[in-house]
Image (tube, rainbow, N blue to C red):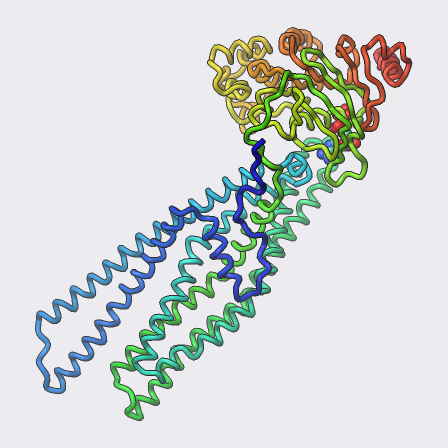
Length: 607
Ligand SMILES: Nc1ncnc2c1ncn2[C@@H]1O[C@H](COP(=O)(O)OP(=O)(O)OP(=O)(O)O)[C@@H](O)[C@H]1O
């Protein structure tokens, strides 16, 4: 058996707990690690183009120095300025402006493309992980929160990749290059131009820890608000029918207000340090002017050098100012990445790529116990039974006895805490995904339809099936009658976002899906629960076809539907209490006989 260790989607670091100074560098590194080589190349090209654009903006400054120099020489009796020189200066400035425009264009494009590609990649990664997480995770986690993470929160990384990171890299590199140049030209003026930078950086670093915490709080509050919203919308019909919309709306409103307050808290705490940072940065120019003026008066500085320092100090302070302005998007993006990191850090069950082949299609539960995450009582306790190939085994028992859990374990939604579920003699956990998918088909009580056409929903059972096979399966499950009523026939989009069809109709589509799949093991969870008597009678024939010569496990509340089963397993409070044929169990006068008698009494009730 070959297994892939989990999680397979490394490297994704867990949420950042590092000191503030390394936070931004860590964020850049995490995003870099998440990018594939092509994306990395794109990001590097984007940054290189930004640097080239910045160099182009420096050309006019350099030309200014040259022009001032030449004017001074000409005034002092040197050679007069020729037309050729003026032409070259003009060409230089035009080329620099065009260069800046061109490089900016490339930089913008590369950064946008890189940010969208990275986001697409992260969303796919999240989905891949979600797909492989055990169902226990999905049921315990609110789906609105997950939806908010994948759709909304990850979008908050867009401005980080597009704007903040190139700006910060620019802010780090360009001022360093210019600063070194300035210090070499005149160390006193160089110090004047750079003197305020360490102070501004201190303010920046001091403010980041608070922002990181507030941004994480805001992201959490956003996720909770989304979860409440989803819950409110999904449950609105039930809430209305119980006159409880007010309570639920209050809960939703409280979650929305918490998110609003967290957002306002973030921004209001951001304003003071940001303004302080920007003020300290802005003080840079007056300091240069002041020191320059003193040196100029003392005759220690040439006017041209003074002018160059004044202009170039703006080039040091400008990127730093831009970095300060990106703070909010950086911290908000970091919080989104932390939430993604936490999702991707959820351990995956090992992925079986090639396991032993099942020998036959019998199903066996051997001392299986299972407790749902967070539950206090086990759903299954030491359950042992066999469903021989080609027979019908019914699981019966009162509500909550553990019948559906048996089917869930068989579809590997969860792994047993102890004991073994076997298919064809092979431990289910060692069976590769393909063999399991091919062996088992399921018709659940609550049939989910995708937002696709009726035909595509049926074809989901066997994607390579021909149109003819899809239609034949539809006819056998009496879906053809539904299709005839739909506006665009079988091409009508149903499910979420499409035409709504009734619960019974959904079950017929799901039955057609199972018929098309034609798997040797069939799991039925109350397959006719949502059908009326006429429909049930009609579909009964299709069901009989579906289960002929198959290993069938069927969950039923109505004992009448399973009285002819080859074997009936009676569950009570998660344990098997009886097993046998209908007549044997009746003769035993135990739990099953009591349930049977209760149902017979209930049938005679009248309103
Ligand atoms: N997702 C879950 N999380 C926690 N506990 C669960 C979950 N699903 C089921 N349970 C609990 O596990 C036990 C067995 O549930 P199961 O759905 O298997 O019962 P069942 O016999 O199929 O019930 P029913 O006939 O009402 O569908 C019950 O106590 C139930 O409350």
